[in-house]
Image 1 (tube, one colour):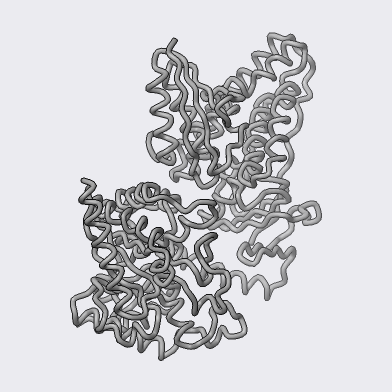
Image 2: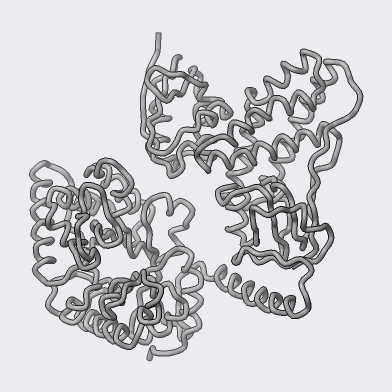
Length: 514
Length: 93
């Protein structure tokens, strides 16, 4: 909530004509000044995203190719500011025409650069935004975003996209932002409420509305603070250690995560390596990816799930399209055991990667003990073959997902080294209600029946010295954390965004423990 | 003549975008050789040391890019660039 401030567009330099040498020097100076201003800003920003954005702009400025057409125009008698705009505008236009939204979003970076240099040419000070205001503008230059104190402020833009640098920054810093708004009709200086989650802006809100938002804002900042202060290992209020691992789908996600923030990877979904491509990934390709994940984890456990295709995750050339009910059809291990060539390639890649770090392999959709036994036999088979070929390989601990009620009920019959409860499927199989059917959302909520099964599995695992974790959405729901801890669960695997809230919920938990 | 050519698949999630381009051009500039980047083995070629030119190629994910280098350290330059791209731009600064 705050006053609306309209961001002015940059003015063209209107100073009278100077000599070619003077115009040339003016542009040289403006480029150098701009570069220094950006470098200074880069020193002040701490996070990797901001640094990347600024180093991109600095690299553009350092590249002679950017300004070369402008200097050519100046030599031909044009004023520096005109020449500079004429040189940059086609570049901006070419990004705006790109089909890829990522490249299209880069137009905003170039506009930022263009305007910064124009301001220097016109002798204007760098733009600044007072803190605590809601900025309404056509677009927000990333460098200006970085130079602004956004406490209690927000952003309403006409242009911009979710992949723009500013949107990425706003998300990571919790600054509310809406794009695609007709900013001309908002009015300058009026009080406004901005709700980034709902995507609404209220101009001139009444007293009741203000009060609601004040309360919500206070709650949210408390939550954010809690989330930010749980970087390390998680403990309950009584000091009991609880492991919190992360669910991932591939390497790119790990780039911005500090491995010290997590107790390892609790679930790596390999189906994403197989989706959206024409050929299945080779053994070597898979090995390289698994290896890098293990290197990232630096000794922490990395639990890789073998291909869980089928159900809601079809893969061209592999899954059956004629399954009558895909969730009850040939999916997970059922599919892998019917495509042994694909399965063997994955097991070979895993056996080779097991040498690199703390790898654990788990099998999805196991229903009867024989399925796991067959997987183990296949694993030993590929291991023997790899050793015959003189390759380094070893057998990782082999565990199973517990997501079929039949397996949960007879868990003591399975020869699994560890267990991981897949709550999403377990819930829908227990209550016979699809998780994708909004009308049945009430049934698909975790019930006593589900918690009873989870408790049964956890108790068996504890009694038999096996590790057990829960990697479904249930683990990432802060409101369910206490109920899961009550069942004895001490290892959670959650999506990245849930790390902070889940650790905070664990810290609030004062039950159990002797 | 010390001329070399190499190709590598871009696996980065959004292709050769800002951060990878900065890394790629910085690395290319560390070598004396003339280094070009192309989207096919026959070009057209752009200067791999220019971020303006490299970004303008708008290389999408899952495409193969080609390098050619000419100069005293051409071979080392190509090895370093291929390692950077193949390593998904994790290495180096």
